[in-house]
Image 1 (cartoon, helix red, strand yellow):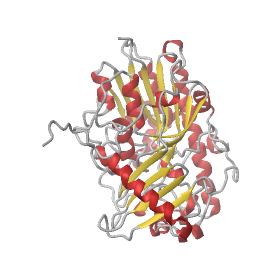
Image 2: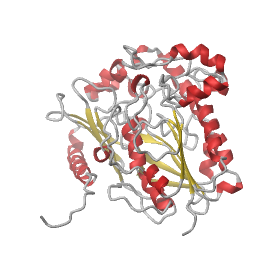
Image 3: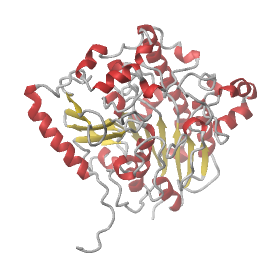
Image 4: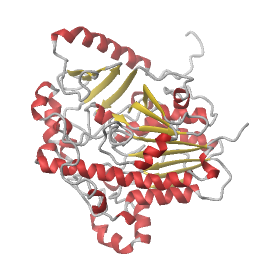
Length: 486
């Protein structure tokens, strides 16, 4: 058979769909991602199957929704029988590499993530910059390359025995550019790509930016002076018509483990939003270094490159920060850019809906791997080149998936056409009252007006709730073979 293509996934963390300069009107400065998009396709409506890290990342590498692959929350280990595309590629003869975060098992407060059969041969694991695990490869690089900076920061590592952990700035987040986590990812990626090896390669390069804490080197923050980034949409008054947990989250993010919207005045929120954009620009420049290597003649024509993120960030919109069970587009819609010369049309924009979980099916198809019965995705290359249609719906699931709440919080989102419905589940799922949100995205793209209780929209609500049930049945895992009628 013909040589299989090289494959590279570049994944940022907590990166909103509108924080890329390919998005109309974006405040982001991402010229390298623009260049990647000009050579390939932009998927304008890519949704994450979950608005938090681990379930979303498991979906990207399995092709399944969280309710099917079983990693339903941060801190849960992906079941051993899950079909990871990274392992499948390794078994097919690929040289496989992971740089940065993986998050297919618990890594809280400096724990070393349990190693599952992930297939990664070259593994430079580092959950985040401040993670105190002795297996943090970024810390090993920092100690060797910048010993004085390492020595000054080492007291800020987060360890398993630390009590009352709160997501706050550490010396590792505040590293200068040359010693930054994003710089490290680019350097490790370059080393992997330039190895003397004839096998096709598969690389996953996971940057931590623009995940909080919100810190960026001064030269990047200076590019976004006060007032240069649009203010948040919505506010505390808006939340009166939204599920009660959103008001709770406004003053208590991450069940009390993270910075909250009400902790800051308007200037503080502006600084957070500007710093976030600075972090995006720093990530873009690190991505540019990876793309520069991939632009070499020996790579470019035969390499499929996918840029995306696991989920978004509230960033002060709707009077909230960070993430959780909220299903606003800024939290659950992610950037998606794909380049594969002669396979993906250059300059293409795809308007139909796709999902982060479609990445696994795309890789399996590109590498001519056997189909996986449990795969619930579609081939994004086929969508980009017109051989297949995207969806007119998207689904996202949250099952108390972030920091645990008491009582638990479960929500499910369905976007269907221009409408979005979110069901906040009540008894018997948990001890909370069942609530909901309904938005007409054509008339209200910022999702400010909750139509859930509006009499003239009750028929639409009923129709979408039925579709939500039908869609949930459609994504159940029924991959086990039926060998006989009974």
